[in-house]
Length: 383
Image (tube, rainbow, N blue to C red; front, side, top):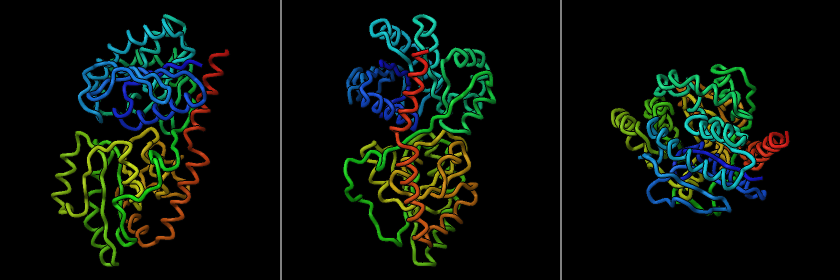
């Protein structure tokens, strides 16, 4: 099967959605399918290259940052991606188009279908659903009818969690929405099982957060709890360190919170890290914490699970599926109590970590996720 993927984010650009795109493309290619991706160029990247037998086309647009994108930048990507996708379809005659994010990539799928009868599947990411991101509220009110037309004409709509499906259905309930979860591979991104340079003894508890530093991720809700938590742990002979990996427009606000609460000796901002660098942080951590307010299905939680970490997360979209004996789903104000509980019970930490690995291996592998998409693609192209 010849598959065309349209995505305005692809590693190293973007976050969880970009990572999902990459891993699914690798799985498709590994199964013998021909895969082409139209994505965005960024400084240091090639406009065209083949990786893992995947053809990657990058269009030069106004994207300024790896981890963050404005609506204007999305529109510029769409403007540049549309003619390239058109040329590729004329030449290659793909069997199906997979659209990552209904906005901004959805119009490409819509036009190719109308012009060439190429079927397209939209894989929602979260931010492309009206109501998910407050910063796009006014824009989505304006283009809402266009979004509904793109969804209506799609051959399938796919959400990665029950919560995201519900959010999409609240906007448009005239079409069925499938659920295909995100995935992970055991020890995601690792090339070997070598020791991390952040290793520590069992009385030095390392908390880890990995994601974009934006307000929606909720770090501001838990950072004020760190001082009291550290003092409480210290009284039992333990120390706490909180490693924050990622970057974004909210970093300065978070750094100010850390300074005001006097926890600079507890919290370390490590900045954006490449996929090759992430294993060191996951391997060294004891507990993964994720206080996000809204998600689709957070890839970083699956990545943490793939390293055998217990997870404490808020009841955002995806939490119902991801947490099953491997951690806690609680409100942000209760994080400190649950973290302390796990610092005192190494047996529980280990059993929850083992359960995380079990879930990744048996429920959330990228191969299983890709197989579900291929079944869907096959059903569509043979209709």
